[in-house]
Image 1 (cartoon, rainbow, N blue to C red):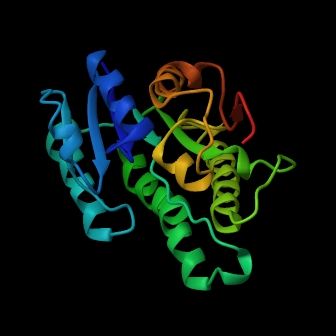
Image 2 (cartoon, rainbow, N blue to C red; image 1 turned 30 degrees about the vertical axis):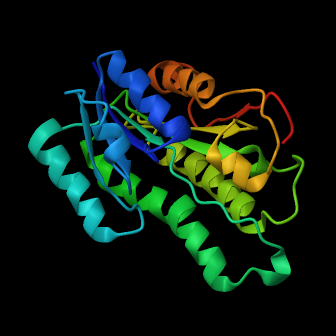
Image 3 (cartoon, rainbow, N blue to C red; image 1 turned 90 degrees about the vertical axis):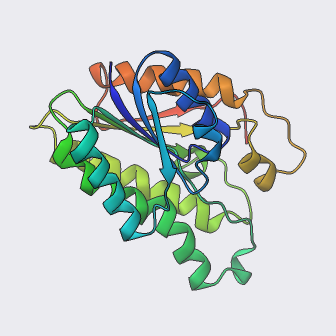
Length: 226
């Protein structure tokens, strides 16, 4: 049994991850601004409360929960993400900041408070995008989103090096198209080859075992373009 934190758990891949991991018997802390979809599952091994990754007071709630209920954390899955589809000429500094607050700064802040509770053999999995891979196909209107996903890849590689002596692994899964609400926002009408449930199966298995084989790596998980 593992103690696993999943962000962005209210819908799509995140919600399917919570279901999968809880059904396997793991303890899951499901974090999202809307906790109702996870609490409605009615499973004793799921804890869910309203959480905004950009707010320091919500990070304190996570620390308090771990200290009082878990004492340690085995896996963090950074699944939460924000998307902006907007021509670069119309994208303001405030737009960039809002995307980076969720996709980069929030991920770093949550990791910083959880790391003291992680032991040797723990695993931090960050969900990125093929749009953040250097040399991959890029799409107009996604400058803020894709660049933030590239930043989080480099961040993960750096922490893998920084925490290798503690034997805490950091890996990234750069996803291609998955049929989610976010995909519909970015590519209206596009039909992805993979469902959220199918991708959650892969991510869940990787989070549990991938650190045995990988550390500081970026795996491209893409069956199509976009």
